[in-house]
Image (cartoon, rainbow, N blue to C red; front, top):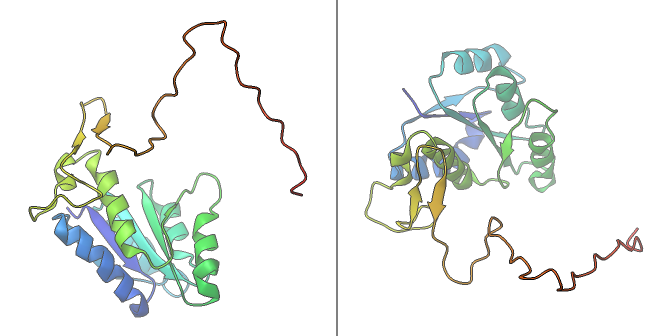
Length: 193
């Protein structure tokens, strides 16, 4: 079984796929690489998705960047879209991938950022296969440092954050008594319009 299937829209996307492959190999994550255009070869895309045993798909595409959305419409499995800079600084492909209709989600990473697509795929896989969070080499490189561990079978994870790091999941202190004055909520001003 291949844990990740990478699909590129054309051979010119291979350099971005190579960045993802580098990360997947570092973490010993099995993958396969396919080439199929959503516009020119829709049946080939359909066959790749239908026959894939992957847990996660990474799709790299530029311009109108339909490939990630088409793949997401064919599978309930997670799809990560990598927008490619071909024209307009890659904003055309970024917006095409990010603006999916409700019910057909595609996770989107930065323009030309194949590495982050692989890191995100590994984190998704880590929910079911915690062993993939450990790189093959002895290293404590971010984003999966030795301080990050998978939690209980209930699906929780525990991550030790370095001091001074903000966690959006940390709880804010609660007032110790009811006599303390609560800060007033500022009303939006609207002069920014």
